[in-house]
Length: 549
Image (tube, rainbow, N blue to C red):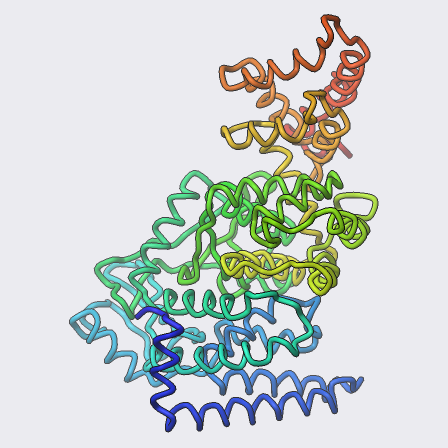
């Protein structure tokens, strides 16, 4: 149950009676869809658009799991897909045709060693949801404990092997004609997709993933992960505790249930950032079908439940630190540092000449920042960035395929709930708080790189920029200053802050004399940011948010 593009290619090539009919079916079906969209896609008639949406849904559903996964990704992007198509596409997440109930019962007995009516106190006669790779039943154990039982679709390994070979072949052959320059990585990106799909159909691996994910958020009350029932799980059957929650699809539906979409978005985005930039282990498929809005709230964070841990991935410590630095370099408009980050991450060759690339980055990406952090939009960046990929030696490393998918899906989910949402307005304050707190050795090293130049001088404008955005994205301006101030002071006077104290002394005392202008500038910055009046106001606001009114 592992993906191997070379082995699977020869497996299908030696079976032309399987490959040729399926290739003809895929090409004929997709060609028909494209022709209809070209002819009728520009219509202003709402009924026509609803009909097109149903045709897209039915086409992807008919082509099977690999194509359904593509539709799921599109269903999270209201900025890429017409809004009147989105409602149909969201059905790809958990509202697909179910496979026969008798097959599911047979699989449960085969995998778990006993019939469902012996294993469960109550087992329904139909699934409550059906997705691309399996369907879910709401069953009851002895007592009042409800569980979700996910049963895998039949013949899935065969279907995935066949279709991935064809998709990879078509992708590599058509890559030179696609309106995107993906460098050398298209085949590798498809391989990454295939690898993740084969991991997703191993439910024992998914159980391990769920338990690992749960340990990362064990102290976070805003994030809930269902418990795995190991005695009722196997390679093709997975049983977990049932989540009573609402799908994060429509903001008005959430409001009607007295849930706060903004608080839920904040939890989802910060949780995603923690996975990428702190833990190095992330959920790569955070679409609305895999996240539930739960009742309750912890401060300014709504409560979110995660399910479906089949598509997970890891990111190296080096990449995590580089990504953190890239966010800071981007917001500080340090395009030289950003170009070096792209080299370190593999988007540029280590031998690439950066001198023509740096001004191009500034021209293409600088304008997307607007006047403030909050105006940044990830979609705008990806649109403009594609321009660079035609003229400069950029490529997408295969290991970033799932990272990009996770970020794009997370932003797409947030945009469904709030069309004006800007992911960086939450991301950058989060990164700034982590840098200023210096809670890990890697964050302390990055903080020193950010606020001191190569000659050891303190870059006050960088420090001021970090402090200014700390409270952005929070419900009340400046509400995060107190904890950041406390963490910063603890760092400064702790053993871990030795390098920071040394750098500060060296920048203030140069050429055997005290540079009072730097001291005064630093004092003014501290006064503006942490003045008694502002701190008192923030303190009262944290105690009672109504004080601000």
